[in-house]
Amino acid sequence: MVTSRWEAAPARAAAPRRRGAVLERAILEAALEQLCTVGWRGLTMEGVAAGARTGKAAVYRRWPSREDLVEDALRAGFSPVEEAPDLGAVREDLLALCRRVRGAMFSRPGTALRAVIHECDPDQEERLHGVIYSAVVEPTVRLLREVITRGIERGEVRPDAVDDYVLDVVPAMMMYRSKMCTSEWTDAELQEMIDRVMVPLLRPAGP
Amino acid sequence: MVTSRWEAAPARAAAPRRRGAVLERAILEAALEQLCTVGWRGLTMEGVAAGARTGKAAVYRRWPSREDLVEDALRAGFSPVEEAPDLGAVREDLLALCRRVRGAMFSRPGTALRAVIHECDPDQEERLHGVIYSAVVEPTVRLLREVITRGIERGEVRPDAVDDYVLDVVPAMMMYRSKMCTSEWTDAELQEMIDRVMVPLLRPAGP
Image (cartoon, rainbow over all chains, first blue to last red):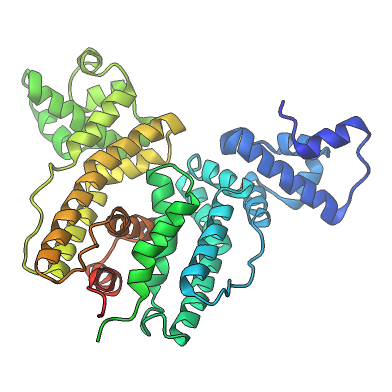
């Protein structure tokens, strides 16, 4: 039996009666915890209820299936999108953005998401790709667009660089290297990627 | 029961007694066929033996486990690496290379590989990543290096473009878009990617 941060405390005293948002949050956190420990195949509604110190009925009342519960747990786990970095230079803004993406990839929900996506069937996978897309990729691309647009306004970046393919390069490189090299990105690697790929890709063409 | 190209013919007549390389090839092809139809979880040594019109012992004699068999079947499925394209312009060479990568990704072994990698456990996955790396990625990167080096010699490409990060951009983009958009790359998309990302990334910097 895994003892987690939020299971340990209530075990010592009787859990207070929680309702609404508080109970919901406890269930979603217990679901993420199950994903990280026993994975998608091991996750049960009973296990999640036990982790959240509630009954199975409380879980089923909100989420009719494991799939619904896991999708909500993952979505709730990722931080809401922040403002685009604005440090006065496109290189620094890109680096700050890449650090955020790395943070999301290796956060608890990011780890859970990667665990699940390797275990599930194609239908579930499509649903989870939707979660990755809307919770991680889409906000990242939106911020990249903002950062690159400001670079164009400053004359640092070529005017035609706001382009769907160009905007895909950072997420593509980050996903590819973490899949192929199964390594987390170090700060030095992020800087190298930006200096060797993004800076030459974005700079204005010679006359 | 799925009837495939190489099952259909021997069914009509008694299968001739095959040995060595011929039998081995039939077993490897039957394994690929099983992966494409019933997947990794459904694949059995019995099923492969039946598909290859041989006995289970003939399979086990060569491959002690499902993992060994599948790894060999995938490796054997990918074509040996050809020469780098040499069409006189880096843009055309890159396009020819990308078409080859697309061909490998959506070939029968490529499809089988993608099916398997979503079903297997992390140890098996690491092994399969090894197959992808040595059968698809590593040869592609080697050819990209050749194509870019020739572009530098022609003065088309900046001299510092032979760089590990730069060489990852094509495989990263191809993997990312086919995962995220779950679409095959059209020829128009390959051209757009090269014109909007690779050409600006590789061109010599302004003075």
